[in-house]
Amino acid sequence: MKPALHRPRLAAALAEAAAAYQEAAIIPHCPSCRAPCCKLDKLVLDLNWKQVKTLWHIDLARPAFDQSLARGEEPKEIRAAHGRYYIHSKPCPAYDQSIPGCRIYGQPLKPAGCSDFPVYEDEGVVVADLRCEAVDLEQLSAHLTQALGPDARISRSADPEFPFLVELTVKPAGKRRR
Image (spheres, rainbow, N blue to C red):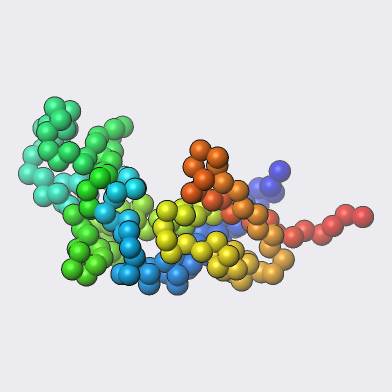
């Protein structure tokens, strides 16, 4: 059982380390990526109404738009569920092939999932999505160790159903009992 006082601090440190790893190793790779995640061929993007309305230039009111989606009308890449919108199978409208890259990167409109992918902290665990070709588990582990200190122990595990999602659990080395 994890001590309650250490979990929030560890989670915050992991989130910061994951973001720093993304900034140093992932983002610089994006312009040369062979399979940009913005194309949404393997990934699903989770958006709110404001993001959908703005990015897809929707002129309808939300109820009318939701009804058109329910009838199977365009845009076919958008599915509504539980008050959110899920986009897949077609590049995000913010993806600009000429850059190549995102036109809204660093802006409030940018979806949270784009900032999190492919490395993020989730409930005190760092998750690395190996569908991104820039993820290097050895480099990520080294980065976490450097950020958290040499006594941090890092273990990896993957869900058998989703082997491309690797969880890195970090435990500070404690004093050993005799």
